[in-house]
Length: 254
Image (cartoon, rainbow, N blue to C red; front, side, top):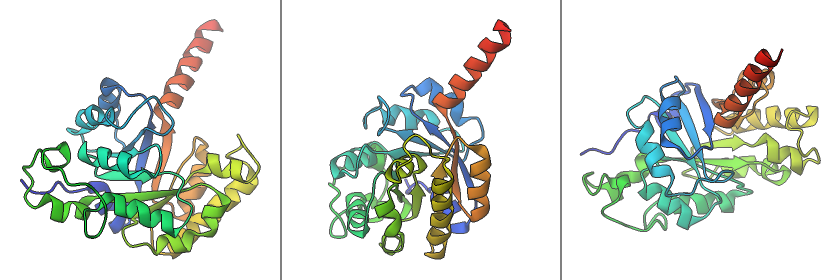
């Protein structure tokens, strides 16, 4: 069996915009339903949800028959968590709260086998298709897409240095945490935050990497897309459910 191709990684290299959906419900039926809705990628979030690393495997399996890439976010830049996600079959990862080039280098090491990294070798995992992929340990890095998240003023100041780290495939801006870092907690669409995000997108692109973002502010997302963001999460599973549930209740209450 050959190493599965990472459509998302290839699309970023080719400069094709990828539209995504944030997923926090650890339910394979929900993920399977959303996987058929036409998004390019779905983010399985173990940082801010009840989802753990092992919970992601049945979710990735549920999405596998569809033309959508699953990206998984660990709870932290933790090699133990990252190793488990890779063994469960993740090929694309979004690492939260990367502050500088050293932490980006640590993330790269966590997804690569020695001597280039520190990923532990296991033969019978879903990542290697239970040992069916020839030369998996030698080639796995070719199709792993590593995205790092900058979400503080300190991290923004280090964008160019982070972008230079070999093995980083894209930089994602987290406007909610950035807003808090800038003194505007709970205001991810504050004008100062928006300006910082737009500037960061330009800097990421000038540094030669694709830029990504999540926001529920659709007009702001259009601005970020116009600035050159390439992988854009346009909504969340919880947000879609709550907004539509509230709207239907209001419709009948009125």
